[in-house]
Amino acid sequence: MSYFNVTILGCASAAPTTRHNPSAQLVTYRRHNMLVDCGEGTQLQIRRYGISFARLDHIFISHLHGDHFLGLPGLLSTLALHNVEGDVTVHTFAEGIDLLRPFVNAVCRERSYKLHWNAVDPGAGSVVLDDGSLRVSAFPLYHRVPCVGYRFEEVNKRRHIDRASCDFYGVPHFLMDGLKDGADLVLPDGTVVPNERLTTAPTPPASYAYCSDTVMDKRVAEAVAGVSVLYHEATYGDEGEPKAAPRGHSTARQAAAIARQAGAGKLVLGHYSQSILDESMLVREAAEVFDGEVIAADEGLKIHLA
Image 1: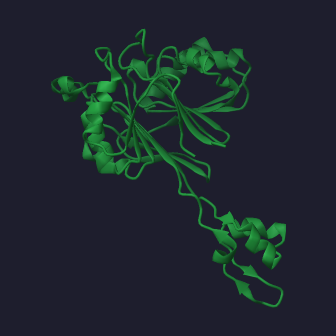
Image 2 (image 1 turned 180 degrees about the vertical axis):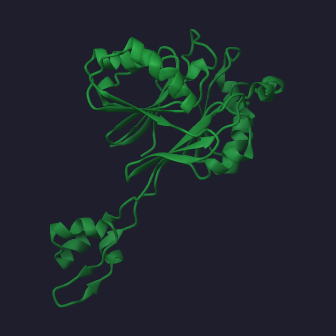
Image 3 (image 1 turned 90 degrees about the vertical axis):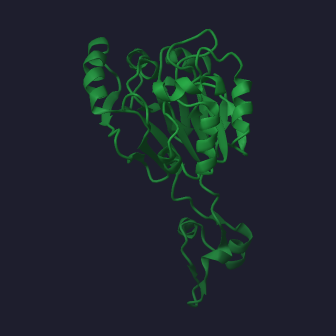
């Protein structure tokens, strides 16, 4: 059963269209429901795809252009209306906290949940969440305003129990956790059974990186090196390349170049210009550069990572 997933809630750029919502994604990892960006209409998308408001615990904002955060005050107000309990942490820049906190307090003064604000430094990479099994890091992107991407990655993956071998040596249940963490087994007569005889290697850790908005830059490739799945903005196709860099954006071909340099396993394109009416064209252009699987994001798309 999958425990690490991404659901695309919006993949348009600049403004809503009849085809796409502004940027928003839901990353789920075990007990976490984490929203990445929150453009207009995000709470409607949450309802549309059957996502529970009650489980939302972290919201990561990439930058302070409206298509990435204007849905946040309404969403936080709805959480209060639904009497959601627990803790909700919004990760954004100090400027964003100064902007959003008084407005949220004005429209949503009484809250059933505890709202926390975490300041993210847009100029330097930093870990913004680490619960021992999942680490979320922010890294700089290169847009017209300060902007960050987010990398979600499993850490401290545990080894798998070899049931037949453990039964052979009579390993008691209370020692299993230690074996998963790499401990050897010491038998009553003092014999040491190496951990490798009792366990198998852990499953390779899965990871996901979110990059929107940015020009093509080798520093982005370095920040997302080795990621399992890379979401990278592809605001334009080849014909839009003259507009891309001046506006702080990338083409599909440039996104593919970053994925190739990073050694990503899979590339997901998104953040489409309103002029893009056929995303398959973007996929074809990217596939000429990147050898891995290329997918065009669409609302409701669910990506299984692990």
